[in-house]
Image (tube, rainbow, N blue to C red; front, side, top):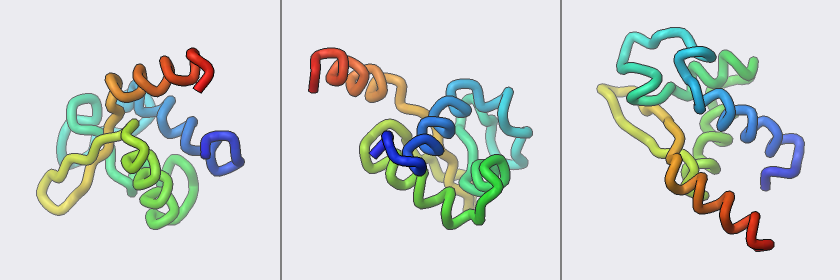
Amino acid sequence: MLRTPAGRRRLEILEWLKDPAAHFPDGCHGDPAEDGVTADAVAAKLGVPPHVAETHLGLLVDIGVLRRKQIQQHTHYRRDEIRIAEVARMFEKGW
């Protein structure tokens, strides 16, 4: 899933979310570093419609490397560092 052209975009999103404050402007709801960023912010950075960003983010949530957090009517996404470390260990072991 991460080796396709779309997968490169997902890896890029994961990279941006390592330091969301450096890659995304402050949102009006929540702190990017603490709460994550919205699909709209990711869409703007990727230059795609929000539903495309939501698809990428949803897949990353489904495999467990991102977590969702609801703040008012907005869904924010941030990295799950523990899960990312687990996945990295699986690949290192030749999974």
